[in-house]
Image (tube, rainbow, N blue to C red):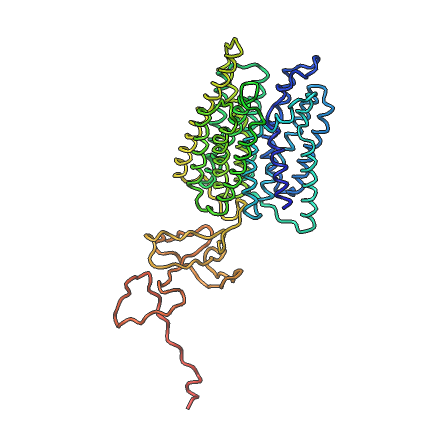
Length: 555
């Protein structure tokens, strides 16, 4: 119960760190502050969050989940307090970086907290994440209505921060008193991939800061954003075939969901003829409730359908982007429930379905790609806006160009999502570059699975049933001792049928042929001179019982 409330309070608080809303209160800025420089430093929160997520996921191998959540919320609270004293570009930059780091700790830590808990908690996490990405821009703008100080952008929800911090403290106490659940671990390969994910994230952050600082033109910004997205997709293509659908889905959701919803929210503001924020809360609420419900349904009742539910969810997002071109702008806010629901529910279904097939390490890797994709999507959307707004001379042309940029972005996002669906389908046919044994990817192995078990040859390559036996470490010749819950068996130099001489398994497993009647059944008697139908199924004859001294002594 406490963990669920903590997710509902802390996860949106972390995601609303992303939007840069300083331009909305530009009229309240003091005249002695560089407004352009202040907007740049205000945008440092997303690069900080993006770089913190993979590093925090690696740190969870040693740090406790409850401690990381509490630490992240403490940094967010500290940024709220320091934001009230910000009076220079440097202080604003420090406050925003602190808030980004805190949010970057909260997101992967809450995912790790719900990973091995009841299925509904993980579904709640995905649903709240989808809703938070959808409504982040609106939630960041809501406290700025009729404000008298620009510093509200640095401390938008201090009361919610206090509530989340109190819930984290309660969760920590309950975690200490009621038992400390083992945190899901990462294997060496997953830690390496997480650290690798920080490299393109740093590159995208440098590009974003450079474009804001140097005043680049639209074309270079679009090309660099497209290059960043291609790099993220290339990074998502590494690993096992099971991990790729999640990585591709995370990139698609990151690039498309928040940048699209942010542009729709800005277009529907009251000053541009839209219903304003007050007219958007019902569509946001409907979309959020349906996203959480869809995530719970997929998690509880469609665990084995991830292969087709993931592309179906992404296709729902494509339809949502198409509906954006049809219904936006709209003076009636209720009609926006259609694109918002299609986007949020599609993202929730795709992420829930793919998260069921991977471990915590792969999930954290995909989450890192998601937030790198958010920044790449904002860069691409900004480039499109710069291209459309170039040469605008009147207010009406400004509004028309702004709406046109949104329509072009919806078209680009739709084609990009379709391309990712096709890429995922093509790459699913290719074997992975690495094989992750059961249990090494953070998830528990299946019942009765041995991490070193050898795959049984296909039915076309073996004759009869087989029995797997653990070989001795002494060069394949020796005895296999009793294992945990197993039976000791003596063997020497036994190999599977059809295996060439000198061949052996690196892990020391041995395959023994067993009669199709079972390993412990009696063989049916054969007539004299009758050959067995299957030579591999023939077993050596049992020698007759030896003469006993007691036989001679018997009368």
